[in-house]
Length: 219
Image 1 (cartoon, one colour):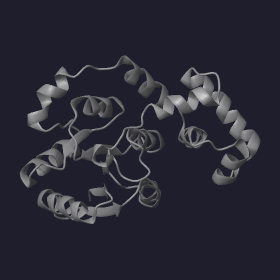
Image 2 (cartoon, rainbow, N blue to C red; image 1 turned 45 degrees about the vertical axis):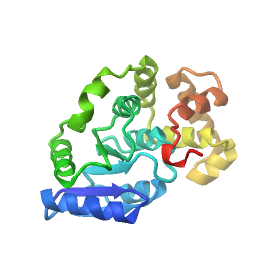
Image 3 (cartoon, rainbow, N blue to C red; image 1 turned 90 degrees about the vertical axis):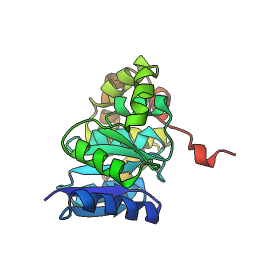
């Protein structure tokens, strides 16, 4: 049985996605989450999840950081982004960081179902109206390089890195992850080497480059 995780902080849109899924896979198991912490908790509780439909700007996601964390910690799970915004450059970046597809919230039921079918068939999906503009959007080599470097981190190393980016000290990270402080230091040394950075600040800046402003919240 196919198992999907719908991750969006708007209950009505979660309902719309559920309806779209039921039209394609009536018997699919569906789990829901309303923030990135809930996504990680759901993936931990349900290792059989096949696909995550992830809101680009859901609470705690910090733009592409949420996507990168899922790809690092759960590499066997496909992640398709969903967003009300369709900036071609942002879509190109999402694909570079491992998104299996990009669904817009303006899509009708037929297009949502087409996207779901494609992603579940292991095909990359973009809305037809956006394919040409996304293909024409400039691709930043730094995104490909950063994505490749982040992909070398172990799940535990990525957890350490996200907490470093949030300004946590080694002792705080050790307490949160239930590990010894010397283990955190060992992870930090490995992270610096894999990311090609020299210190915590540079590591935090590298991860912070994945952050995206939410256009709907701009003043």
